[in-house]
Image (cartoon, rainbow, N blue to C red; front, side, top):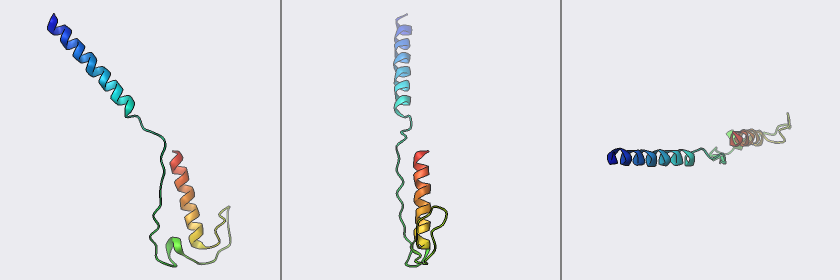
Length: 80
């Protein structure tokens, strides 16, 4: 009987320990995304081609508009 009581208390201890570890491992919803822009001059996100602002994107160069889109998408992903 003492062995059964000891096993029960050990199982209870490990059950409580598992519940606590599961609770502490729940995802935390705060995150941030940082962007590393490694393009050369006049290409990709550093493209200096002049363009007109379109569709709410206020960038005046093609690279600026691309950066605005990527930053907007990153902000959306941070909220997920």
